[in-house]
Image 1 (cartoon, rainbow, N blue to C red):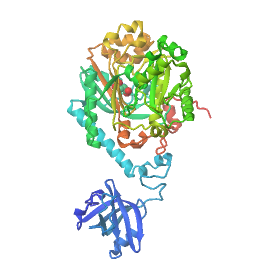
Image 2 (spheres, rainbow, N blue to C red):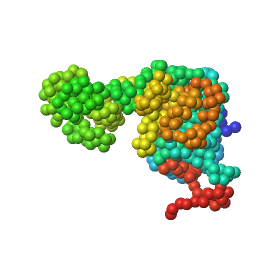
Image 3 (cartoon, protein in one colour):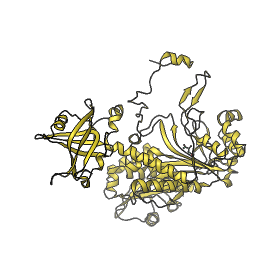
Image 4 (cartoon, rainbow, N blue to C red):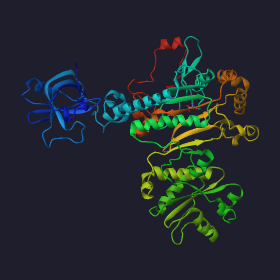
Length: 590
Ligand code: ASP
């Protein structure tokens, strides 16, 4: 028998008991003729003592090095008074070893197996098996497991079937580049790895399965931004005969259980909902961090008659003046200048501001009438020491610029401290609904989908598809948590004619439509039920629950930002014979 107890489970009520443990040597100390080491298994660490009286164990202890694998037989003893370690769950006891069996040795370590690891990420990933031994990483993977299991349990109880969809498949349009796999059997053709199971999950609805889910891997060949992975996992859901609120309710139930079981937090449901148009006006972002109350105000009306051209003419020609007011006593003039540069770099023409001292200070104050100053004070609810920043322009642009500023205030610790911005709650969920159906793509000079090409427009707005496509709102919804987009989904077009019409608006001619979407379009024509769904980013959810900044820390074997795996050395060259079988000739420079 290798063991009969776990290291992390030894407490004072086991004092006097004989135990057998197995694990890794975590830290070793020689205290004047007595050897101490910490023994670690997945459940935690416990201190082992080897006294010279137990000669065999004592001798074995002498030869141990870090991360050696051992089995220890011994007796649980209370630690002598004053030597307890309250930081350790097992800190009240130690195991007096009678026998230590070496199960395996370990080479010199590239870094120490401890939470404050002193190694760069490349090295950590190369020796991922050592990195994952660290308690923090074990905790991350255990929590990931707990989240997956909770999701499965809730969805199972709600009548969902877990169904796998193909990995070797045809391109699925989610707006990214595909990973391609050459086919040996049909030379010159390729499979694509799925960017999502989108088409298959919709086809499962046409198949009458009604409720599907999958912890699905999605592959997107994007230039890797800081926290992207070429493959990520989503809790993928599709349901028949549902409206938006039905999909939301399932996700809320799932997250309520996940938060209760993993953090002991009781989330209030239903989560708040806000239309895209409103969220953009109030926060200048479709994923605002609503842990903070800070909202933008519209003060266009104050300036409708204004002689100050920049403001007045913008409003008179249909644009808007938007304001963001903060407690700004500590903000210096040079910081305002820096913020102005920052906003200009995002495409704004400038960053007008007023500091509400007595009298107010501002380079543009001389252009305001006394009524306008009063009007501002009233509509913004000003207090002394506040600073108001303005965004001016057409459509959502003025809010978007101030939304960027809002985000800078919340995320740059220099400002959040100074402005006294503290979260009003630890978890702020928000459903953002009714996104525009289409976005204009200036590069391609055509309409393209805002979410995916299968999203249904809001029924009453169908006629606008012919006259003003950009104004058509859709049944797309996103779930935002603390400023992060956690999930995204929509009610789909279940009627082939509407789906075709939308695709043709996006510039697909019938042949291209058939080539790319024929699979789905054919199925829709065979009695597709109304349906909708969502996909929730599992990696991101686990990272947030664990307070990890990077999703790489919650994925067992992630890729680097360059898309490589230092452990397996993927991607790698292959031998010429394999290429020949695939009828592939390389054309790689250098
Ligand atoms: N397929 C979508 C995505 O992966 C999610 C959905 O619409 O259900 O983002």
